[in-house]
Image (cartoon, rainbow, N blue to C red; front, top):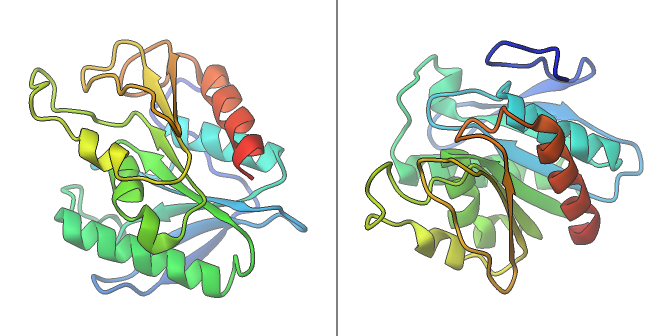
Length: 213
């Protein structure tokens, strides 16, 4: 994958795009189903980015390599063409609606790991109990705003009661979360974008998913 130099990478060519109604407008799921999958990874994008972010695509590749189904979710504000994120309660409500829809239909009967990059990781943490996730994947979790370590979001990580994997750039200005009893933190080269070593991202995600699912 090192041949990709742009900001985004292509999604799986076999992905099916689903539009899912939520309380705050339609969301979009880029869905790749694996026959006989032991589970699924459902992940969301960062605040101003999309589902083609390089680390998200790398995580999806790792999941598919482990024979898991994958859904990359676009929040309603992105589907509507806006870059500025919706308020957290709207993000959470839309995410819960999307996961409930997938669990009732496309991913019925399989355990689901929820996750995302940056603000998408925060959403997955805050809603982990409501979605019934068996694990939470956090790519570049923004522990605090740059230069403001006192404004910590540690409570969002600590509130998750299922296994958590945090993949964090060693020089991420948004901070470095600490490991916990059920929280694994893997440092990789690079900053908040996690573009410097996509192979390390894939390895960390793939190994963790085999343990959780």
